Amino acid sequence: MKRAGCLALAALPFAVTAVAYLFAPGLPGGDGPARPSASAAAQARQEAKAEAERPEDDEAIAGLPAGLAAPAKKELAGRIVASAVHSTLDWRGTYGSIKDTGDGQGYTAGIVGFCTGTHDLLTLVERYTEARPGNGLARYLPALRAVDGTDSHEGLDPGFTAAWQAEAEVEAFREAQEAERDRVYFDPAVRLAKLDGLGTLGQFAYYDAMVFHGPDATANGFYEVRERAVAEADTPSEGGSETAYLDAFLDAHRKAIEAKRPGDTSRVDTVLRQFLAAGNLDLDTPLRWRVYGESYRL
Image (cartoon, rainbow, N blue to C red; front, top):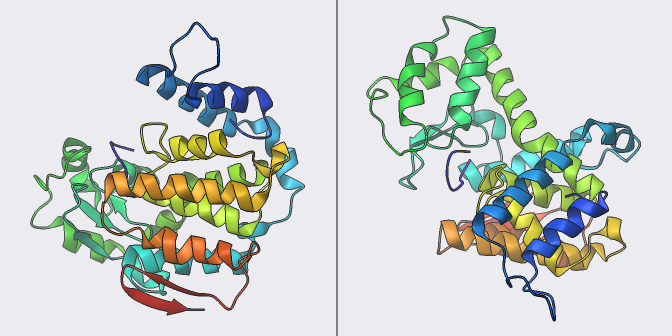
């Protein structure tokens, strides 16, 4: 989705402490610099991301409540995200959506807004082609690789948008989009939120931020957003207040949105923060929210 560039868990005290230290403004009486170098901070976030995916935590995750992964809640999450990405609650009607929004990420397409400029659309088509050679998008792979990381349409126009829409009528491609959404965005966000001790709303907040900022350890990527929050408040897994931590996370999410797309932070202000202010940590319906000028209700 939208992120800068192409594409430490609370349950892991050492990783959290190390990264939180890197983001601290400096230790009293310390001899070292007040802030780490950009490369050191990026390396720490990358290490935190790797720790977040440790298979040895699988058993702990399996023993936790389903939360956002419960079918009804996951459906709800899909509809709320679709309101922000596509201005609709019908996320299943967006498999064939494709347009250039002028945000510098090239074409934005599909159910979570895979982008030609941010590597995730390329990865989707590559994985789909491995499973289904000769599909209608395979011939565009050389062009997709060439424009990855840019906003260019070279080699894609004029036929790529029509090819995407046609392929979106194929059930296998719809399934591929859902699988990639889960692999890249939904599953990692929910997993990390659970290890941080967050309930359903917190899991959705992580998912929303993962979709918007990308699963990146770069500046303003999801993992930096989370580490800004960890530097301000303890996660529930560390004994902190869930509400206080989510408040800090939403502040960090909002600041990163402003850095990328100044002017509208409603997906935090009148969606996530509105749910938090209501104390709706389980993300229970009925829900009312407003995003990018449109009002919704479930």
